[in-house]
Length: 143
Image (cartoon, rainbow, N blue to C red):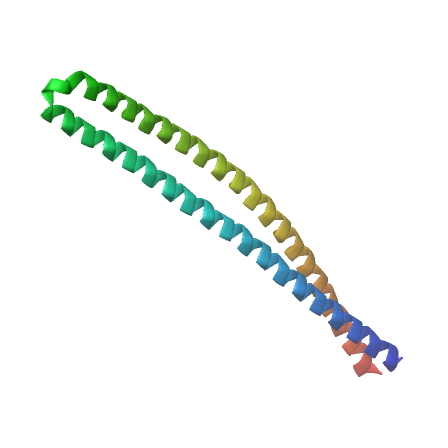
């Protein structure tokens, strides 16, 4: 009986070790999602910088327009085109950022839910193993 109880204890500890490893993998999955979020934020910052540069170019063209009255119409065309490019790039950037953010939020949310479910299952299994261990230890003490 003591040999069987010892085997049960060893099996319970092996299962506990496996559950700890599952928890570690779940944490790694969350880290991967957080890393992807950082990458998207970096891309967003880069795109916003590009838009800012385009708008600065637009401002430079406005200044040039005031200085060069004789080429006013040509410069106004350049200014409109630059402003349209900047506005279009801003719209495009905002739409892309929104799509990236929504996709990432769905992905991160799904991963986090999955990891939480895994962690809860592992926690419940670990509690069961601890409960079995305590029961086996009581049995051992009583014999």
